[in-house]
Image 1 (tube, one colour):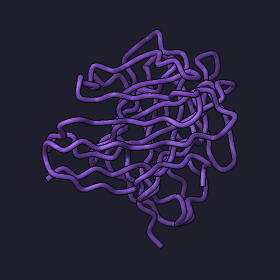
Image 2: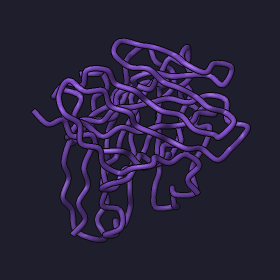
Image 3: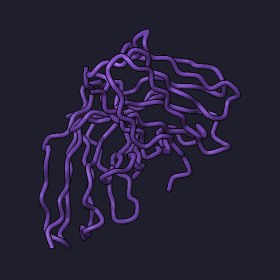
Image 4: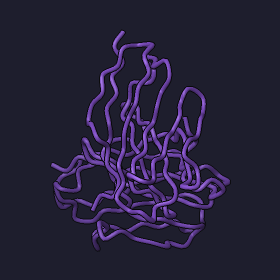
Length: 109
Length: 114
């Protein structure tokens, strides 16, 4: 069964606002998590990853937060742009990726 | 463009026919993955190669499915006696293995079984 899952299937965000996408996982032993973005008609694209020995990791306009106590991670996108409209997946990795269902982010102009 | 090529991009076939998809990974990547994605769902792992060796197959990969990577470069995924339930996007990805979760996906091959 699915071991990672996103909280909301859709998210509508005003351009320029920050977006927060949430994901829960069930396996306490999971030690590596990844976020992917999938634009319409394309394959998933790596955004950022985080290991369980970290609580926070920042990339370009994105931040991933990991709360191991409640087995929750989130992806924050700063100053959301129209190009951020996509489906976002969290995944956990042993040596292959196990994806959850995605959150569709729609950016309003 | 990630550098991973898949062919064909779209395939429409009748139930019972065989289909084959090809994936050309990034040339220096030794790991190659096949995933299947249905509408509204995340990709589901099918199988994984390291060089030419097929190291794991998901239980989703019934005996009608076979994948090969004969020279450790391109890979093929064949589906025999297609069924309507096989309709999906078939995604190929490759990685060098240096960054565990960073897979480079192709744009997929969409299969429609009538």
